[in-house]
Length: 115
Image 1 (tube, rainbow, N blue to C red):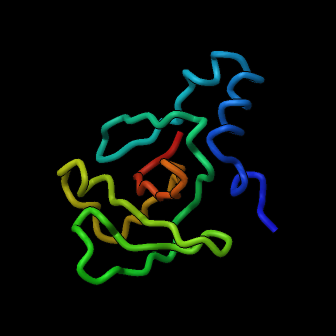
Image 2: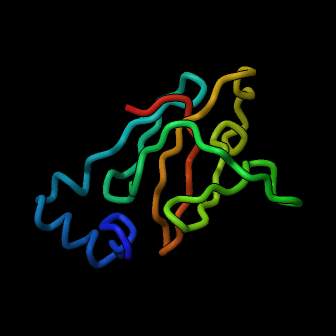
Image 3: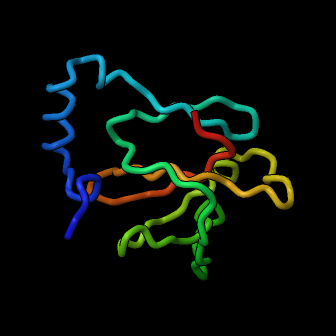
């Protein structure tokens, strides 16, 4: 059984934007990466998770931290610090995961803080 966040496709997201008005299409979820403030369109966000167990993927590009399991779906985890060529995360610091949908696929964006 799929949850609401798993079953929403682009048409459902667009319908939600229309129901909420044009303001929803302009809303962003803010996140912090190495003291830099970033924003993700709120309609693309599926979940916000605390620290997760991430499985490394052999031969993956450096910005791909690995994958995680989200209610039975495999989600690619992208380390935003590496992708944006910023300083590495301090030892012992565990990132938060912002799960977004892009072209029907789920991606976890690893950020230092959310909100």
